[in-house]
Length: 102
Image (cartoon, rainbow, N blue to C red):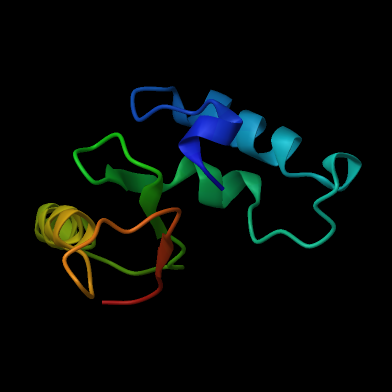
């Protein structure tokens, strides 16, 4: 999913963002199998690079304690990686990173 194609923004209310993502990526729009559900869309930690890009980190963990203690470090590392790129120092494009466990 791209922030440009769905119209979502980092400052959007998580409940509204969840509805927009699930509506635009549903079966009626040609997306038969999508990994997005309302809960995932509400738990987006950050967008990158520069807090507005098309890449995102999504918290899909279940029952993990003390996750907020490492959130800032994860977000900072993701911002750096999304900006610097994995190979050839190019920005990543339309990447979803699922955070399952600590």
